[in-house]
Length: 127
Length: 363
Image (cartoon, rainbow over all chains, first blue to last red; front, side, top):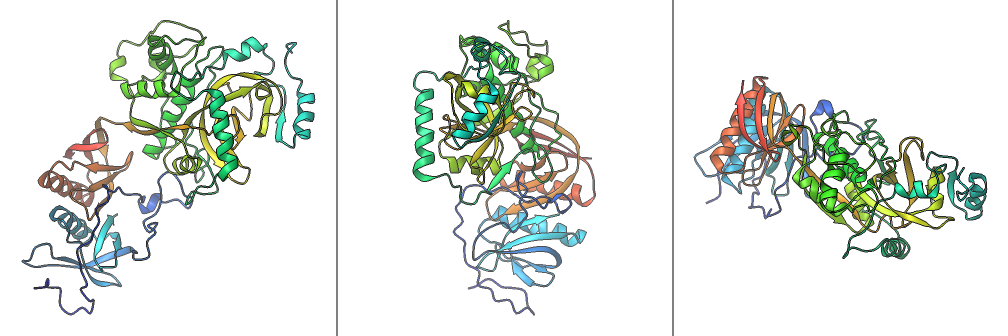
């Protein structure tokens, strides 16, 4: 049975398990106030990822949150985007992603989110 | 001028005739007698390493065979000007001692430290004296027989004190560390050699400066500016410096020397790709080991990704640091507390072990 998703949103749930088995990643972007025009110093802005299936949703406000009594099924509502599901490949990852989204919702601060071809959010910067 | 030294005016004619694009002149080195000049050269490959001649041949062959292209790296890069920031520590003077390996290696470590912290003003000045008169000396090396970067970098894994703990002066001497030297060590996490020029550029443009060695010919002592290529004069010896950038337009590496600011272009020089073995191999410092408390920090950002137990926080003075991934509840407990600190704009004290946050106080 497929995962439930939030109602009243047209976004199609095409979620599938990602095959990301790469080595442990690390953040590369700098806080908005410290981003420089020039490259270097590891100061790349979020959005530098080079993959045709990758979309960076930058400077988004979290307008809503949703979860249900199903494993790893947590969604975030982004300004101008609507409901987007958080990556569901790991317990600790989906909880950490939910915590960052919840923080952004509470503080009404912006996030940069990486959405992949499965339509799920796989990476979040919370500023 | 010493009798055997090259005359800069004549040297400039030879440079022009060779279609080279550098300028010679009187420098603090060109005026020294040849035996004094040679004292500044101390890069001596140990058994099992490529000789200086083999490095020259390898570098020339690489440059000629395939050109030097770095996919994805910018066409030029200089750690002295990254968005207006200068990450390179000041030019030092090794004086009349073949301790260049200690200076080139230390320059690479200092620059890497500033890059790792993303802080061009980070006060870091490490002791070349500790590196050379303690570690190198224990291996039988001295001002007269030099050293090699592999050994110097291995020593940095054990730790080197700050300059004030053991200030450098030229000339063989006893290992005379300050009383509290054990609490003043800076260590690197690891190092590795890079053999492909494209990889050198990628590292330079993203991670920090590199340690390198090359063959010095007599004309190099008179270098003032431009892109150096060997034009005339015999081999003076091996030398170690710190590579801080490159320029594909000029086809050259940009390096920091340790002969004071009275030599070269304010102590720096440019050298053509493939020349004198400069890019046969370079050595990279993987990172600076940072262990200890960081107090009164502010959390400016949070990051996580679709991987097990991989969450980071951005601290205002040191940048990104990873939260302990030891198990799920440790990671999530720490992340919860960091979120509370960030949300409430509260300061934190964190204990990091080799750059990983292991303990947090939210105040």
